Image (cartoon, rainbow, N blue to C red):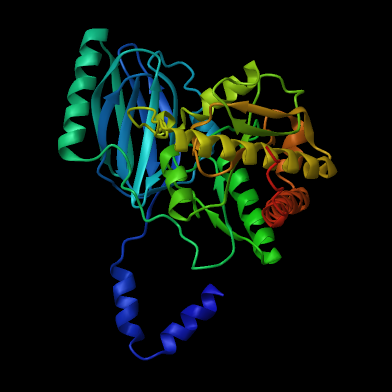
Length: 407
């Protein structure tokens, strides 16, 4: 297809001007490898790029890390390369990816206080050199970096226009593929990435819903890009969503645990595992190098509390519908209905749930999650559950109201 398009362009009027402009457009810079070099008094994180970029680096705390902002870079590197930095007393791990349209980011997790000795890109070598420092000096650098970030450039990505569905009479279902960009999420033992697995599932689910013709699906992200947690909720509100479903695939220390789990929001977690998963997911913004974890704004009044109570009842109703349909997919967790304080589920007026497709730490789940056939079947069952949820609500709305009892 690309070759045919090129031939057509070459034969069309004015094609020489188009070709000249295309030639002037620089090819996107890619990162093709990374490595950590250590010495007694410093550590270097080095990326090999196909071109030079201008990096901007700063230190951040809670947890201690170095954040390096770049123009857009395509990271064509095995994600396992950054999971650990063996031999370095300063660098614990690092991650990388798109942070916002036209912007990429590297986040370096530190084992202790460090100072930035050098950040430079010369002849396609991006070097981030770090050296040990005192706690007091590190905290002072964090304060200085925060002040410079406010005065020079925003530390959070600029809010892009929310993906919106064309005007439609159909109820809108917002599907939220978790993580993305520099926030990689969980990683399987063979390098499988949660952010990619859940994105492919979300696309398959959206296609199934669209085929049904009764509901309108909207994805919170249409590419491998980072989205803050509150931005995901904002997209749901922007689209006047009637349902919000976040998709994830975590890892556990226990490799024998398998199966899908459906979470709803609650002030107190249903169990310790649900609390751990929610805490981890709520730190997604920090994983991308943002300064603080934000929560959805809560409003304290009677009407708000009534709406929240009704919304959570609908969320529980949808959760049960989803579990019921997933039984046919044959891959439910032994305790599939759980709840915890997930930030992305705290919208008081949109029924919301989080679907944990399975665990990348389980060989059985991993085989399912990477199977196109399983994905198609599971997406179909999920779409059926969503359809059933809206059908039940429609029947409830049409049901005649009982007359008040005589006094």
